[in-house]
Length: 127
Image 1 (cartoon, rainbow, N blue to C red):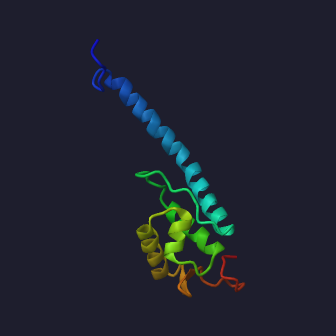
Image 2: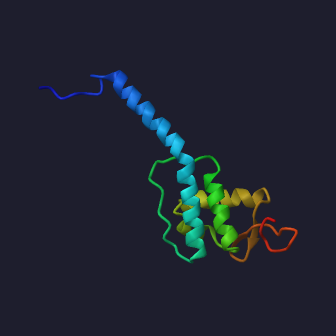
Image 3: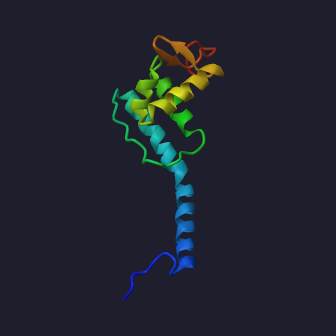
């Protein structure tokens, strides 16, 4: 008996692919939230061992920024290298995002790293 190929049942294969894509899209917000929570937990416990995301998985728009800001909120003055280690993101992604956030005023220099701009209550976090 000859082995089956993808062209044997293209309609079935297309349906499976579409189902998988739809399910991944449905689950992505939960995966992003779990990643953010792990980064916050790791930062608050002083650990560096946040799990790295699966390779070639595109994160939801804004997920990198959210994770970066969460780490900075927990550790003002943290460097891009430390954020990358804590969050599991690539250092180049963190560095370019931090640079952009500094340029638009969402972050400010603090020691060797960055922090959130001073809030009206003066604690460096959003009120």
